[in-house]
Length: 253
Image (cartoon, rainbow, N blue to C red; front, side, top):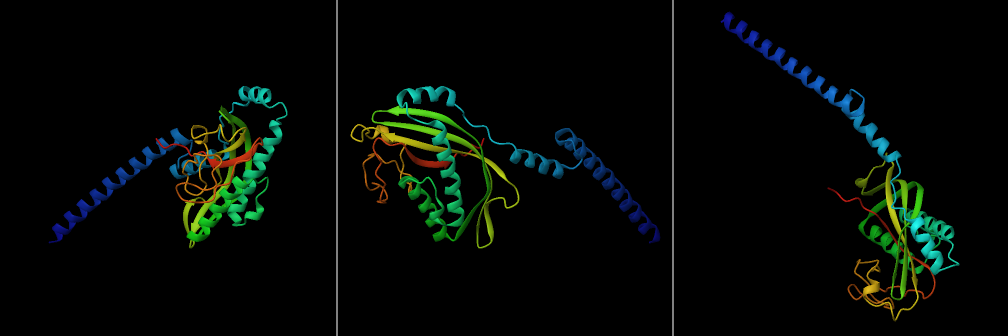
C-alpha cells in the first residue's frame, strides 16, 4: 500500500513538473510576442499602450480645401471660408454640449435644421432614459471634403477630426463608449445653399433627410416628412445654412 502511494506521488510530481515546464514555455512565448509587437513583456500593458497611442492620434480628414476653395470663391466671391469653418466648429461643439446636458439652449450658431436635429436627439435620450455624455471636446482639423452643385442647390461639406471623452449609459450601466479613455473620430458638417426650390427636385434633395426617421426629403419645400409625418424645416433660399452634422463611422472589415 505504501508503495502505491509513493507511485501516485511520483506521478503527480511528474505532472506538476511537466505542467510547470509547459506554463513557463507558454509564458516565455507570450513575452516574445509582446516584445516584438509592443516592446514590452506584458501583453496587457502593450494593448493599453497601443490604445492610448490611438486615442492620442487625431484622425486624418479627407481634405480637399485646396481643390474646392477656388471653385467656391468663383461661384460665391463673398463667401468667407474661414468664417464658415469657425461657425461650423462652434455649432458642432455646442450641439454635442447640448446633447450631453439635455439642454437645447446651449446650442450656438444654430439654424432651425440643426436645432431640430439636436432637439430630437435630446428628446429620444430622455424618453429612453439614456444619458449620453460628451466631455473634454477638441477639434483638431477641419477641411472642405466636398462641394456639390446640382440644379437649384449647392452643398459644401466640412470634415473635422474631433477628440472627446464619450460614453452612453442607462441606469448606471455602460451602453457605449469609455468613461476613462478619450476617443478620436470624424464628423461631417453640411452647409447648404438653395438657389431655386422649384428647380431643386427629388434628385437634388437626396442629401436632405428627415432628422427623426432619416428618410429622404424628396421636396425641399416640404413642411412634413412623407414617411413619419414630422414637421420639417423649410430650407431658406439664397442663404448659406448649416444643414446637418453626423459622425463619420469607420467601416468594419
